[in-house]
Length: 467
Image 1 (cartoon, rainbow, N blue to C red):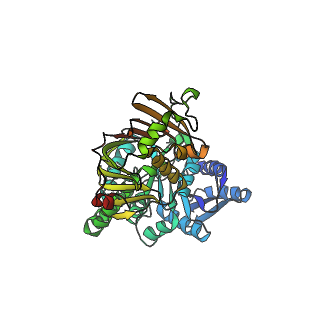
Image 2: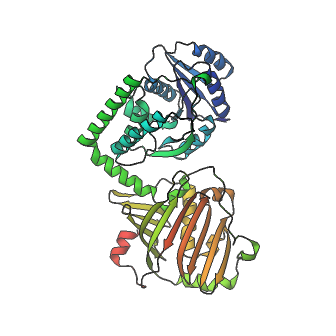
Image 3: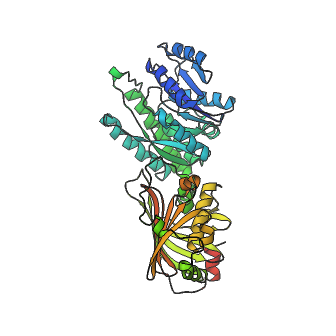
């Protein structure tokens, strides 16, 4: 069980019945404190909660006398949480559909990126009602249109962590978003306001009536509410919001595709497969001279430019994200990745850190020690700087005439969690393939074409692609 002074679990409830107390007890076993907002219930379930709160100081109960809808209950709880000094709330359903065991993972992701909206991406069970599964596809498509992009995987899944001040800013003074339209409208308006969505997979459970399952969805009333909400959002988008939404989406895509941001993702998956080079026979001893010619060759290679392709593998995507561009390496300036597809932007990696240049402007990602470790490792590898690499990595490799393979294994658990295993292959003093692998399902694979004829970078190239 984890306690926090900044992140609170918020559970809105209306006539949930006996299952409510079971869910709250389970949540208290994973995270404290917890705030339950009773939205005008008439089934007496608040009595059980009051008795439970007397035994659990970390449990607070906020009782609303009249039922106003899920959104109204969440916003009332959000205001109460702010008044008590909290900055974030994780909202989850009271009926047990949402996974209490995922609370800590979502809260940890929020603490690492406090400015973001952490959204659950549902993993549906086999017993999900078909009408729910197919009906939500329309909502997903409409939201992707309203955002001019696919940043939100599922706008209807209510298991998510909100930054409180942005949430109250975009919905606190509005009349909409008070019932079942809350989850969708909150996600869209927060994205419009600049709050970046982060999607994490989470399992869902569906209970039958005999198992205590409860639903208060009114087919006609609530569908009309959702239609009216999308009508308002699309009208607002088309009349005046689309230029700013378009600029923001481009900036987010540019940032999301930079190499160093791989370290920002965190998934509890099985470890990457072992590498056949990682053994005592292939370990490169400190000061060994059989790689000196390559080290010298890289040190005197001068400016290098080549085309490259990149694949990004994620556990929640069936197909990898594919990118193309040009790579430039300068012994004095660092590394520049000029992405040309699917969007054009430049990622500059040097001793100062990382800088992203996109058509909308340039910006540096938020400081992150793990991203810094990834950046430094990549720079040292591209320069074949063995002494610098040996401080943080065990080096393994083999040579076959002019070809070579190298594997970098982090020396500490902290570095393994952030950077993972790095492998590279090449020929002579050129690198042709780099793989940065976090887990068996999460990796970046870069394939570099043969270098262009040697030539120093022009003044225009230095200005555009370096700093």
